[in-house]
Image (tube, rainbow, N blue to C red):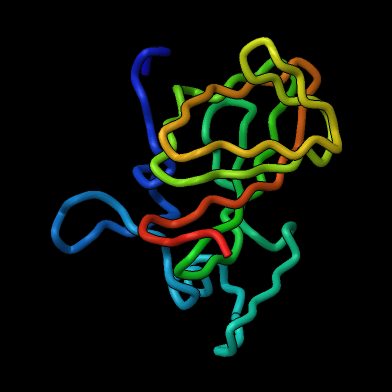
Length: 149
């Protein structure tokens, strides 16, 4: 994809399943995540998993994502950027997205976000993160139709 083309996390399988109506992808249920990862989650409204137990999915060369447990309101993810990598396309947000830089440095346009930085994107925002040093970020994306609590 070129830089002017856009994407949305909602359109990126395999961590989402296709809607029966064929209108795109939806977030996995806890049971679907357990089936995919082999990790059982309790049926109570809480789940816990060690991030190293979540299967990493290649997003682009040098960038991997781990989809973390979520609810009908939000989902979590962990992304690792190798040094010198850039997200493969412009990321467009239909809902709010937040991330915390755990290590390294994430660059958004001309802004540099070192470890310890918390970043929030409003619905309708867009960005294309990259890293010169490598980085690990922990994020939360609100699901469509949800509201932050």
